[in-house]
Image (cartoon, rainbow, N blue to C red; front, side, top):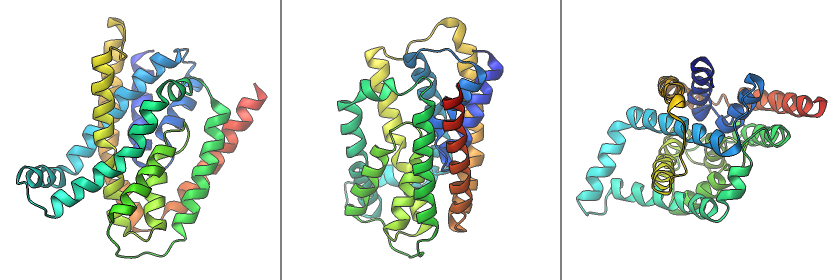
Length: 264
């Protein structure tokens, strides 16, 4: 992989991690277009690194909220910060269970599964269309809501389903305020990404050659910068109920991906 290709993939990851169009799906499509011949394990390693970059950009955007949560936890008092932290933990449980039980099966999905990406993008399009038509409310995230949103996040581990699209759509359909929905969606994935990276580092699963360090670093920086811009943009779009545009986009890309795969 060249530095240019890594930067292109990094920008795609940074933009699509927050926009509801499936970052993993777009990365796989871009790799096919760029002629990336990485085996699934190598492909997944690069994808994890890019997800780490966007997780850092999330921490930067929501640094005030994260500091409040951390302070609240160390005060050992039941307050808004500790309550929010418990909800984040609850939302993580379904994805942790699926990730531990089906890790190998999920890793096998990375590596040119274009038809799967296309079908899952069509599913994402339907979710976004339903969410865009939902009525807005001022409801907060409840403990049950956190679990249900967590289940949607676990389902979004399938290649091609947008994680942010699935979680934000689920939140909106549950009647949660759109701004709160976006905030919860972006924060709930951060511990999972850091946990995944920590696990892979300890187990030695994140392996790459010394020649790949510069391209990976370039992709990391590109994903981080693009993530900063996309995160702010997405919050504004969710407030204005503009998800139907992304629904149309996902449908078009999904159909194009399926057509491309069938013609090969």
